[in-house]
Length: 336
Image (cartoon, rainbow, N blue to C red; front, top):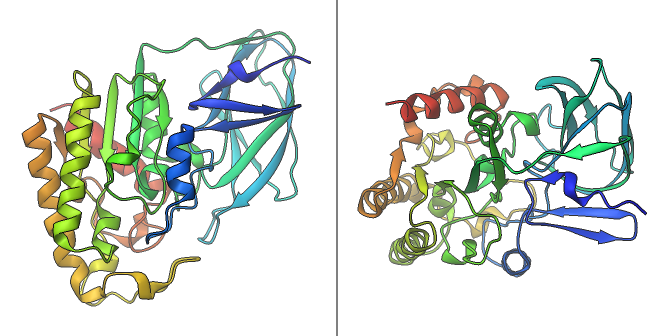
C-alpha cells in the first residue's frame, strides 16, 4: 500500500491506521493539554484541520480521495466546512464536507504537470484515505516557515472558509509553510508552547488575550500567565521573527452588548459582563508591554479591522471579508 503521508503540510505528524491518515497539528504533549483542559472557555478544536493541506505536483488528469469526518463546528451563518482546491495558485473549487464522509474528485483544468493544493477545513476533524493522483511529487519544505499560536481568530473559526483566514493569506503572500497551532477558546499558558516541536519556524505570530478577559481567573493569575507565556516564548523562539498581534476590537465587551452563550459553553462560568472590558484593556496593555520588553514586534489588533459588524460573523470573530482586511492591515504594519 502506497504511503502518501509526505503530501501533508501544516502538520506535526500524520497518524496512520491502516489506510486512514489523520493529520495532526499538535504534539502528543500539546494534545494531552487540550484533552485535560477543564477550564473555561472550552477548547474542543485541537483536532480541527486548520491550515492543514495536501500539496503536490502531478500530471494526472484527475485527483481524488476519500475522507472521514469527526466533529463539525458550524453554528454561524455560511459556515459549512469545505475542501478548498487550488491548481497552479488559483482557487478553483470548493467541495462541501458531509458529516457521513465521502469522496472528493477534482478534474484538472490546465495541461501539463500542475501544482495542486487541497486545503482541509478549519472547522472539522478530517481523516483521509484512498488518495489518488497518479505519479505525484511532494512539494519540498519552503525556506520560510510560519508558526501561529493563537485562539479562535487565529484558527479562522467563524470565518466562512478555511482558505481565507489571515494565516493562509500570509503564508501565500510570503510563500511560507504554515503550522497553525491556534485553538478556539485558548488563553495565555506556557504549556501551549512545546519547546520540543519538530517544526522549526523562521516566523512566529503570538496572538492571544481575548479569552483571558472572559476567564474567571483573577487579574494577578492572568498577569502571571501572560508573563510566563512570554518568558517561555522569548527563550524558545530566540532569533526568530516574532510578531505579537494584540486582540481585535470586541463588540461583545461593550457595556450595551447582549451576550448569548456560545455553543456548548455555560455562560455562568464566564467573568461577569461588567468586568470584561476593563480586564480586556489590562490584558492588551500587558501584551504591548511584554512585546516591547522581549524585543518582539507588536501589531495593534484594534487598528487592523474596521469597527463595523459587516466584517464580523458575530461580536468578535471576522468573516472572510474581515480576514482579508485583517491581513491587509498586518501587511501594512509589516511594511513600515
